[in-house]
Image (cartoon, rainbow, N blue to C red):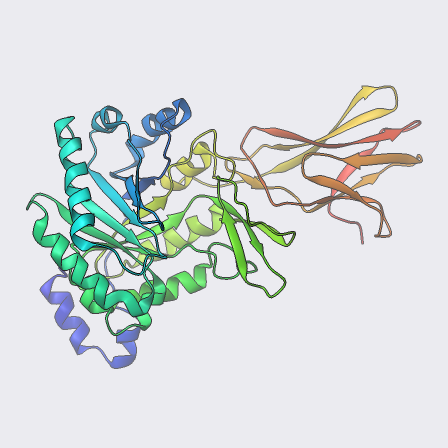
Length: 405
């Protein structure tokens, strides 16, 4: 709960200031970082990421089971021994498919209890459980009733966490649902509009301020460390969102959306200068590993977690591989993942031919032939990517990022 002094202060403020939230006016503090482990297969790269990241993480939120749209459970079987060795509190997360309008409350609670018993038999007792349910706002009253029942069945040593959506703040039943949880994680990363990306700092800040006036107890904020491929139909309706797994409903209209590390690091810095009342931590979705296709690299994530200076520097390299044939590549000499440049052009005095590869294609429609990036992508620190070739007989070509005016 909030300190009594701050509660009285908030009551004394004008209504306009209440809308801005009640903030702690003390020296800026760095909030602890937590993270979700959402992977269903515990591979060697995931184990490595867990080991390397644990010193920077105060608590792990581990996907334990999901109640699918069909009404069947899919358990994940995490590596409980590896989690024990982290010596960090563990939150067992149970996801309920957002399209489930109704379910058997008792059956869900029984499955949760059975899984927690299995964990305890293997020597791991989580400090709490978390329900991740993207409920529609008009379902919050029924959801609150379920949470109340669930809370009564949990041992006193287990705290009840829930995730909350910004769209819930329009509901009169939000307070009813929040009252049932010991801790709430506000999820501010989502695909609302493909043109707005996964994360909008100004919108996120507004959501946090509004939520601080509704949540009277500890809460955290979920931040993205990933990207998604989003497809939509001709009417602008989203048809699929793919972060890792393939989908079977993808259309030809799509975009790669990425969470920018520098934007999120700046957002964290701004929010930590004067923390909102009750805000206790950042919870990252999700732990990145070397095999992820659309997540930040582990060095980038660690740099953001540890508040290191962030710098992405893309340089272009031209290397002769055969007489008159040159390979084009990009290299990231910075400290964090760098967004691949959208266009590159050739500067040379000789006639040339060229083509792109690995996400770049040749475009001849502009006055100057150029390579255009067809999909967004990140280049990890210290890594290179071949993006095409140039054939030029009498000169060494030079590549330039962008299109000359």
